[in-house]
Image 1 (spheres, helix red, strand yellow):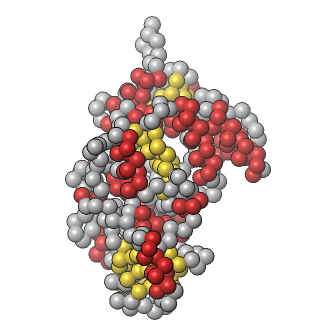
Image 2 (image 1 turned 180 degrees about the vertical axis):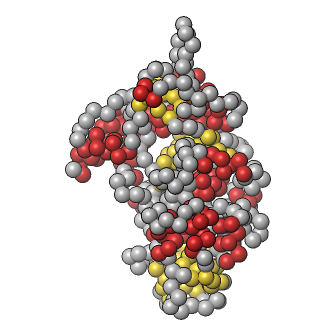
Image 3 (image 1 turned 90 degrees about the horizontal axis):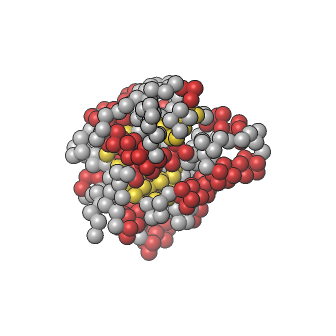
Length: 419
């Protein structure tokens, strides 16, 4: 049997979704309770608790854990945790410690029950400064914090609905226990998680293939929760990635799955959270690219790389694969990265694809020193997300050096249908 990485905290997975046979009775009880509507972020966190992705948390955090996660990235019991997982309400929400509360989504569906163990106020400015490094409400994560109620409720939760996700994304919506079982079935001991909320183009393909040089396999892990305006719907992404994996990856080295988180765009802190819950999914590594989980100019392009240097393996077992900006280099005749130069010496042939993956992987793990690209930028193909959307909308030709033809065809059909 493969020896997969242990869940976070070296404890068994702790999914908070009730067994199927207990849900009907719990729902009957919940209908008699006071109801608390959750924000979209709180719903996504509840679903992450339900599936066991936030193991070993028993529910929403109390005051000491909230402050510890914000300031020290550590809970009251000493466990490493880089972001607060909290539930808010208004000051006029009449509830006392010891009460039970029914938790609902925006449409009123009852999702679970909170046993109120604590009720406390928070310093929103502190949370935003520590987590997002800004108090600018133009940042969507800051805006969410500032818009939430002034009171937090804490305590254990019992969940009996995961909303539409298991049905809408049947076969893709995989819980940590399920990914671990798949990894074990394939005989994988080391797995790299590749986080994505976008279709995969040549640059993403390069990173995933470089990660395979380090690990037994790659988990392409799709964000299924709320995204930014203009992002490609998950079902379209899934079809394009399925095509890419079937046609351009070695058989049996990739699993595609999805999970219900809502992005916070907290940059370095969110990168740590992404690694933490990937540990629960069974992943030994996380691909961390340029400006991972970032937004605009709020974070430096490699802040998410550097923050992992502050956290030891005793606190966070899943480790980063640190990749630089990735692009097609016409001067080098293939895919390249900003910190690994593939320029051939005079009289030598350029490196082949496999050698490029190995060289990039060696730098990503720290086994080799970086060698910044010496070529000029005008020989590098980069297309911004905004420009790419314009090209699809205007039916401009997408260069084959940027994306595979099958991916382009699927995305073009989507843009044509939504025009």
